[in-house]
Amino acid sequence: MIRFFSFALLLFSIFYFILIFYYTQNGVIIGTKVVKTSNQELKVVDMTRSSFGRFVGLEIGDKIVEIDGEKPREENKYGPYLAKIKQLKVVRDGHLVELKNFEFIYLDSPYSFFTYIVPCIFFMLSLICVFYIFKVNLKKDTISAYILICFLLCVSLAYLSAGGVTRGYPINRYLNLLSFLAVPVLYLNFLYQYFKELKVKFSKGIFILILYTLPLINIICELFEKYINYNVITNLNLLTFLFEMMVVYVCLIMYQIKHRKKDFSYLLKVLLVSNTIAFLPFTLLYIVPLVLFGQYVYSAVVTAPFLLLIPLALVYQFVVNKIYNIDFLLGRLRYYCLLAVIPTTGIVWVFVAFINNKDENFNTFQITLFVFLIMLAVFYFKEVLDYKFRLKRFSEKYNYQDSVFKYTQLIKSVSVLNQVFIHLKATILDVLPVSKAYIFEISSDGEIVYFDKQSTEPNWYPYKDKFEKVTSEIGKIIEINQGFLMKIGERGTSSYVLLCLSK
Image (cartoon, rainbow, N blue to C red; front, side, top):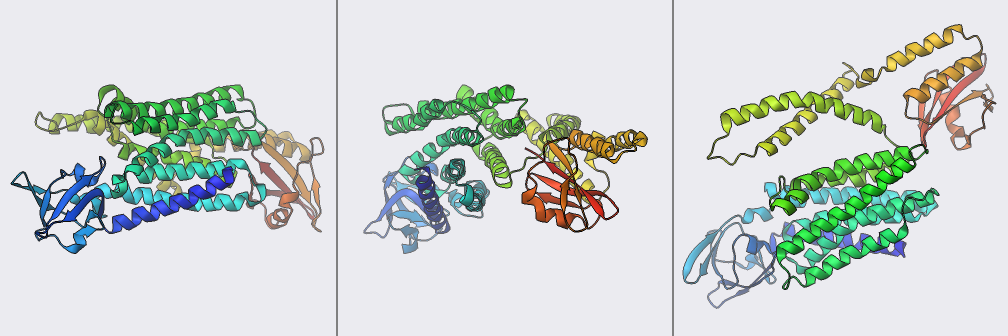
């Protein structure tokens, strides 16, 4: 069932993307219906609540007498809808009214960058991920892969349907709401199924079934919008999304605490951190202020892109089957945040002292947050440049050189080769994000022998061809699935290779 649904959702999302691309390229204002009058004018006969025409000030009954300085032409009417307009004049109650701001529907406006270009780019990237997941999952055929595909497509649909000229479709509102509220549920469902396939109980399935009913309840409330206050419905939708995310967040925290000593605890930590970074801006800067005070700090257009971190983190873990060093990333983030505080304070003080006055709309909190993020990005970019030009590597902060020094001190008094390798493995396990390290001896005829007989021999056969490639020179590293191989020495005609794996 989930396989069929994922394929159907994929086809629908592609069709929806083409529809948005088609109407945007033609500048069609969906939801604003017009008819041609006997005077060669266009009369607005109907508008949906979310039509762009209503947003710029058009009203039902308006007679459009001039478009872009000329009389209405045939190209300004695309089927029953208005199209290709930048400004127009209408006759309303006997008065001539001029309306502008139609440039938002065109690709050269800043507004379209967030409502059309960025969602389309994200959709294309999601499609690439989806097809790659299909390819990786051909042999495994796991249910979690199809749920992950549905999750990615739902995020894409929610992002695509949130803005753009096609928002005038009445059904577009229901599509946006359904996909938006389904994102946290699919996220939790994926985690449940993913850990279930790892034979780990993540949460109870009944919780997921209950959460799946919430989007349907909100859709029913939308159908009765005439009898319910619009602000009440909007707050209900936002609170439902917030509640769903809180459930996901609590599950991650609980199982991180419960399984903190297990091999997969690091994966839970990664998911918890990526979940926090992704939803914190959207929750604290948009949902909470909007519900409590009726005014957001930053709009959803600005905060929603942070949500993209969740599918990117999930796809990275699922497709690559590797995990990044989250402790290192968090340490680096804390370090840069501390450095960014001082220049941010100074710059904002200048703004407050010399620019802010009673006549200007100046939001100190917005400026502070914006400057802080800019400084954070500057410090990170500096690190990239430092690494690229080999000026200074961030790893020095974590005393990797000190670990090498300690290792050399340990092996000074060692005369047995086995003890050298034991100290080497211990040092690598302490410093690098790997969980297992093994030593192999490879003879000149290519025979591979497990060197450390004191522990159970690992399953090294999938990497047999890699062993042959790594023996050409000492220090050579070859990346493999979930780890790497490195030649660490040789004696006579034999080579010694280190195999490191991470769970």
